[in-house]
Image 1 (cartoon, rainbow, N blue to C red):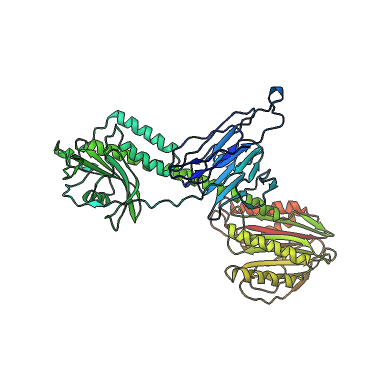
Image 2 (cartoon, rainbow, N blue to C red):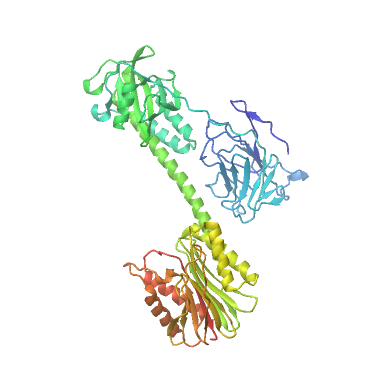
Length: 615
């Protein structure tokens, strides 16, 4: 593969490229950085590369993408047709590659995942991260596990696409925006649209404004959208001599910051202090003029001359907050200092605000989609940590786990120990969501390692407590109930730490609580444990559960409570008969909890473990 000669931008910096062998289609967009370069040829099986609107426009290296030709795609006569090439100039600090049309770079083949991989730029350089894709991402023939730093010349392989990384110079820090100063001339009063006569707007101007709105919605670069607003006001149809977008501090309006412009033949316009004060006071478009007066209700006088002729100034807010106000500031010839031109500038500013809102909503939707995808993957991973129903000797064990926020902080498990017994446990991390799920995942790992080492039940709990104290320093805690059951005799050892007491259910539906010494949750202080013993008789069922069951609320905000849960479990056990089906019991318990909750949202994670002995 030959390397493209570097292209120099306006600042003399050289960029290199990703080269893509595959057909590509990327919408053109102007930018203050070097423009993207794309060369496209159509193979027999076309691909598609598109660039989504960047979240941050900076001058970055070009990346080169090459599509690997299929062996069967040879031209007639034994000559292989040259695969199409696309040079993609990417911008931003994070670039997502995948099949989804929302990705920054789209590789449109079915074996590419919707969000396949991402390229990340930080102070160290560029890295690649696989996003849990189905077929993986390779670098120089090695599959990426987690993240990998990229060096110039590295080849990324995604399905049949090769992405060759050529690092250009590090992006330059953006120059500080220039500032301007206000003028203390003898300016006349500035008026708003409400103070002027009804404007008469020509239909041709409205048509051009509609085209301007469409152009804003198609432009992904925020700086370019702002520049287009200035260019519109200084175009031949809107007659502005000069236009800028200013950022004015509400606490000090003496030196506004220039965000965009100036455009127009007049260069940087003089900024009227009285106009700035008026727009800050009203937060509405204002007009001031020094031209010859027309009808009194259509004209406001301003004592200023710009370029040797009478002038008018228009200032329109486009966005702001409690600290600053961004303003479109336009200088017009004096004859255009009327309500009509103030109305046109106001409409253009309103369309700019609508476009900014639309782009913000689009980017928020993209971020939300990424978050939802990450939550979906996290939920799938957590679901894999919940064991399948199992049996050991005369002991059958089943599970239920339903997080209330996609992922949850409950941990339910059962695993055999070295001495032939089975450890059954339910734990509940304080809080909900991702944070609690991460802690629950750590508990899962520690429990499995401790059991494999042959650790006793008290030692296991002490280990969990010490791990939480060392990691979280008392900032979170975990409740737990755990039972170590002999599947031959039903004898068990149990411990409880601030958790609901497990229930023992007889075949006729009688329920007793497992005898446990009351303990405090782990993760807060050093604890002392008291081990309890008990025995399951044939046909008895042990239920360990989280408080999400007993604290289940219905549509009337009525809690089920321990008594309600006890009655529910007893009724299900009686209906099951002397030889219950454990899977049926689990389903019945879930269904009745859902029936009690009705349409009320789940307020807590729901998890339980059932251990049926000798049935």
